[in-house]
Image 1 (cartoon, rainbow, N blue to C red):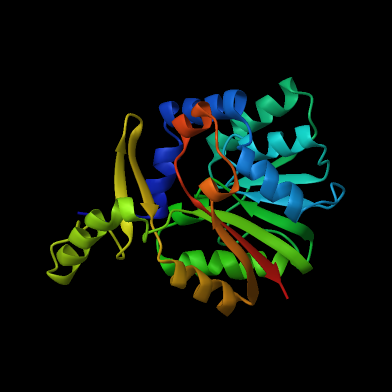
Image 2 (cartoon, one colour):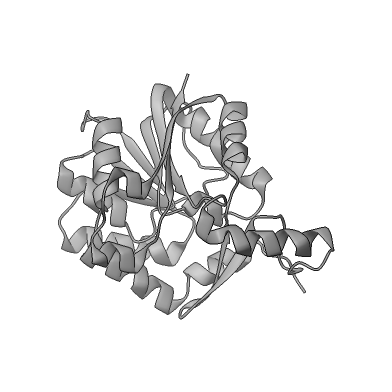
Amino acid sequence: MNRVSALHVSQYFAGSQVLEHYQEATEKVGLWNSEKIVFSKTFPDKNRKILELGCGVGRISFGLWKLGYRKLLATDFSKPMIKKAKRLNLTSKSDILFEVEDAISPNLSDESVEGVIFGFNGLMQIPSRKNRQKVMLEVYRILKPNSYFVFTTHDRSMPKWKKFWTLERKKWNCGQQNPELLEFGDRFEETPRGKLYIHVPDMNDIRSDLRKAGFSVERDILRSKISQESPLVNKYSDECRFWIAKKK
């Protein structure tokens, strides 16, 4: 049995049902209330160049455009996602630059952007902690000094997941874990659109990886502590933790 890889992830995000789901979220949901609050406070100057990694069909970038941000670059490693995003860009008459890029090795110059967003737990859908650490290093490289990196993750320490991860730990200790998984914290979620891979991290690991990359952790906070979301938002997403890191 093959272990989860970037190929598995790319195949999932190229599926027609997944593409439709992301387009629907882009057109019907838009920015979460919590995202509006965090992005507006973290990036108050709407003339700064903001990069969105793992943009999918563009839900966050289109939402930022509606808020008045005009220097937006949105990238994703999924060509079908970017293709849909470009179509929406035309029909919505926005002027967002959408490009196919791999977050692990983006073709962007040093200190070329003034803010980076990796939303919807996208960073945690990259298999292997080493690869996620590479993304943090790349984000640090392309950010201008004193600029911010904002992303979200799930939280392994949440009480609702305690029983699940206790059982998972026992499986890993006995070598009885799913052989497709790479690391403890990895999991597959069976969805109507296919098998979704995601890593659910320990908060201390995230803090450690950010600091090793050179960031200072300015804040981390659960979404529910920022704002109550609408039933529509909760239909498409669940609780997560916002991370706000600064390039020293």
